[in-house]
Length: 467
Image (cartoon, rainbow, N blue to C red; front, side, top):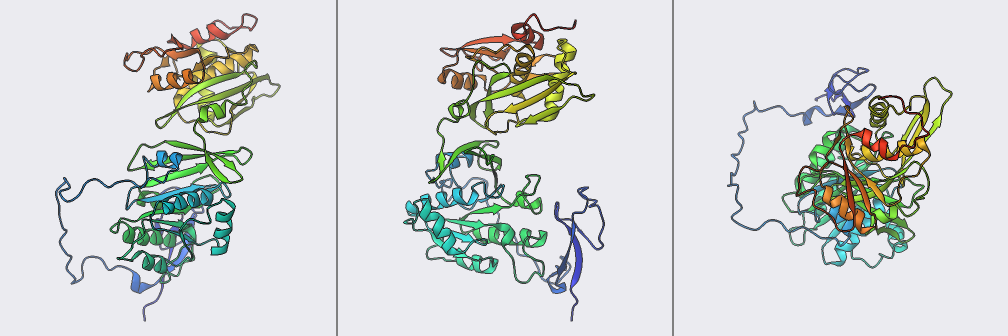
């Protein structure tokens, strides 16, 4: 009788080792190896056996049989936007987020919306009983949706439910992939082998049948999706549901999308009746802005294809510490250190002896370098204690030489600002005339160096060291 084989698998990258080690040599993570036991009979023997492989059915690049797949439009516009216009038949989507952020609520609303349009949809929960899902649907006012529910963690049972040739489902929700298991694998649910194999089996049976699958994934304390990294490579779309529990809105961000743009976001507001779409997120983020306070600047950001106006808040205070504090929320701390160094070196603005606190108001996180100009303007305003013009917006990338570089889609940013009543814009020098066409109702002030930004908004009573 064959003995079971013991191996140690990295829960970060999935690399397997015969002996335990403190560090994974493949990805460099420490204390990431966990013991797993697999049956010797299930270990593949390679291609040296006598069984001959079947030749592939090769086809041409151009589809001769049918047109391009039509997407399934859920009607939840913010979700459809992030997916690139709707769910593609046969696609696999992974959505992650912090516990209690609203992943199950969002997916229940989506599956109910599609079911009401006549699509057969399955909701399989490995964490909750059927009655618990029904309670949530009743609270959201979705109890009358013809969604088929099941509570199971067995992948064999899920795959068997997909193999209905007479009436196959169009969408399957698996909540969550970390609770699924295959019974011929000795590892516990949630381990690297179980998560990888369970997802692979479901995707393998769903794709040929044109069934869209959405997996719910747990996240680690660092905010990354738990399990092997290969899970994100196996799926077509990776979405991250983020937000601060102290705020009433949530952000659905696309991290990977084979069928649409990445870094697209959808904005939802958490209410008693579930997640409500926010049609104008810029107005929401600026709703509590105080216009007469120093250190506040409005950034015209671009998330995916959507222009977004957010408030950048800065506080600069004298420090008695040898190493002044730098606290950042919603932006890259390393980029703040760079902007401070450029302002001090190229403009002579003394920030080294001050504590600096920077916040992107509303809890949203901004990743693009176009925020450099708004951050610099907020720091200058906070240092001089002079409020910036209430009807001005800022965007532009700052280089180490102090130059201000052009960013993409300037016209979209200016249109969004003009729509909300802003009259002035401080922007980089726009060399592409197509991208820099004039927008009615807003005046664009082009500057090419951070010294000109400091000259505009730095008051005379602030001590300026010679540049």
